[in-house]
Amino acid sequence: MEERVEGLWSDVRELNLGTTTEIEHLHNPPTPLCFLRDFVSQNKPCLISNATTHWPALSLWPSNSYLCKALKDSTISLHLTPNGRADALTTFTLPNNKNSLTCFASAFVKRMPFDRALNLIATKTEKKGTVAYMQQQNDCLLEEFGVIAGDVAAEVGWATEAFGCSPEAANLWIGNGESETWWHKDHYENLYAVVSGEKHFLLLPPTDVHRLYVKEYPAAQYTCDDDHDLESGELRLELEEPLRYIPWCSVDPYPSPERRGREMSLYPRYFNGPKPFECTVKAGDMLYLPSMWFHHVRQTPDSEGKTIAVNYWYDMQFDIKYAYFYFLQSISLPSNDPEKAQHPDTEDYKKQQVLQIPIGEQED
Ligand SMILES: O=C(O)CCC(=O)C(=O)O
Image 1: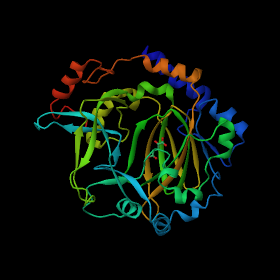
Image 2: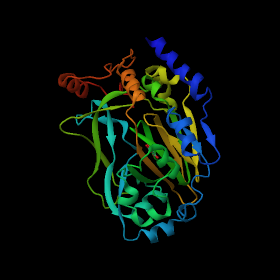
Image 3: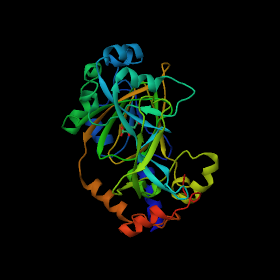
Image 4: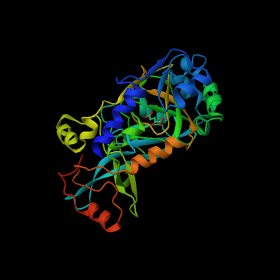
């Protein structure tokens, strides 16, 4: 079975996606027909330049003082982590200090005035104990940033025509070079436009699902006891109670040199298989990220310390491609992982996992 699945990875590249790490680059927005025929129906990404040249945001938003003035009365949700990794795997040390486990950690989310949040993101200070990211994914362009929403388009015209519907949500993302978005996939068609700074995407097609070693991890949440001084304030990680399990990708694509050997031996299908597609989205560019594609994102800030992007999520079709993908991910392949089970399913097994993993034998 392993060989047949490996054959699938090369077939999709040879037949459709290309065998380099680059995705197709369009120098102008496509017509709705071309977009639908050449990309959406083929579930194939592309980078599109000159799709947002008419947006006032491109000249206005790089200025922090413009944003602070326009949003002076706005309260927004800021996501805080100690390491820039929200919705990512990290090590949780149990209260006895002897055991630890790998868990899925969500950010501490704090509502605050926009200017304070931007200051936490864009100002570099020595003592910083937290990494801040505005990334509330609830249609936040309108929900939280309504006063500047008119600086960008409400939807992407040619995409709306191709999909036959308006976006389900439009989100604004403001982060800095320390934030990283871990491998995951979404059940949406995504048009992702960078307004300031750069975003660096790694992409893998849905056919490569086994290369990311999706397993169930206990959910945990960062919290903060004293959130008056969020810059240096300590974030604490707490396991959710009752325990809840989240299926999540296991692979860190950029392990530190000390961890690299271990990661490579745990996740050979990722490290020894075809390289992920790579795409840097610069200010003024837009990425079409098809539904169910796995993506990992890093960012480079602009000269005022931040990266800004706006993305539009359109409903995907739950069609025959989805059915094939769902079938493929149900096939389990052997794993080198000492934590073994890809989908542990009994409560006893899960409790054992939580209680019996000594520090030092963890993935982090
Ligand atoms: O920009 C990011 O950090 C992540 C973007 C993303 O995951 C998405 O648009 O689905």
